[in-house]
Structure formats: structure tokens, C-alpha cells
Image (tube, rainbow, N blue to C red; front, top):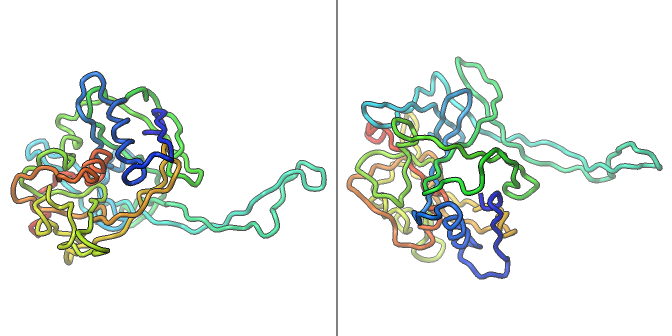
Length: 300
């Protein structure tokens, strides 16, 4: 979004996490004028074939429905339909034109390379088929879209990646989007599913144990984390993830610790946001987005 709105941050500016705090400030200026209401991004949901899918494990996404009576999101039966995300290793070759004074293209000697491609497959009724889902986020703010009024191509994530960005105005009442929350808001008691990684900060050294990090205060502490759950058990995972390439800072950001997508948390009491400025910046940019789900998911 920073690239789409024309935001640039000089690489010689000293900034925490390579410009994320300054990016948050500039996005807030562009997206919330004149009301001054801080923006936040929550998500993503994966949308394809008219259905929304949410992470429920490593590379596994299940269809989700919204229950207008219970006011919660209800996750579907993975035996009926699910999305599977994986990677394929492919081989490419660098080409050159004008070989021997002609227009033909030929492979450059010794310029073969390998690269990874993300692949999504719909698994339904024991059959697989490739799909290309959309990533859908909720943008909360006063004006909400800045100058982005239609679908446009933007540079995405470095390495020559391209994405299409589109912003639509819609009401969230009685929809799944009203069940999406940021830790910047007060979290009511209940069971939540992490739609995006939950960032953590080690209290000392390189510790990665869940009892030796900060960042779980908005959810009630380490005891609130159920973990990644399947039909047999739940397992708490702390992963190391990169923050990607910044198109507005023109540099690759560092790695951080995080609880992965699909982590279940059970919030027992009402909790507010963390006091850490770094974490608040990450929250405003979409990290630790949560979906309110049926409490039975945390009780199985």
C-alpha cells in the first residue's frame, strides 16, 4: 500500500525495523485525513469461487461461514473442502536476443536457475484442482482508501514480484469482516484464530521459548495460546520469519519471532494492546490479526 500511495522513505533515515514505524505514520496521514482516526489493517482471508478460507494449520485453509445468530465465524469441515498451499521448484533460463545478428532468442551459456512458485489447490470431494485465490484484508480508518480507487498493479515483495491491489468500500455489519480484530482494540473473552503471524520479542538474548518473550500481553499471556491444532492435538510453535522486502525503503527487512498463522488463542478476560511501540506499529500494519471463532475450537 505504501508503494501504491507513492510513499518513499530514504534509506539513510535511521528507523526501527527498517522504516516500519515511519511507513505506519505516513499511511496514517494519507488514509485517515481529515478525521485523524488511526488506521489498522486486519486479515487476510483467502477468497476464491465465492468462498472465504482461513488458515487452520501449516499450508491448510478451511472455508469459513458467518453465523448471524451467534455472531461468530464458524469454520467448515476439512473433509468437504480445503485449500492447500505449497511450493513448486522450477527451472528457468536467462535468454539473450540478436544471436548471430538475428532476432532469435537463445539461452545464455551457464545461466540456468531454479526458483520457487507458490501453488494453491482446492481439495474437494477427494479431487484436486489449481486455484488462484485473492487475499482480502479489512482496512479500518476514516477515509479508508486514500487515492486508491481502482485495481492497479504494484511492485510486491522484491524479486520482481507484481500484485494487483484493489480497494472496495463495503459495510461490515453481519459479515465475516465484523469478526476480524486487531490487538489494538480491546479483545473480549473467547476463542480467536490468528489470520496473520503474531510477532514476539525475546526478553533477553536469542531465546525463542514462549515463556521468555513479550507480545502476548494483549491476549492474556502465554497461557492463552492453544497453538496449531489438528484432529489429534494442539502444538505451540514459535517460528522465525522475515518481514520481507520494502518497496518504500528499498531494502530487505530483518527477521522476527512469531506465532504462525492458524494459531488458536483463548482469551479468558478482556485485554488491551501491548505497550511496545514496535509491536503497535506491526499491529497497525496487519500483524496479529485475529478472527473470532466458535469457543468449541479452543475447548476440544
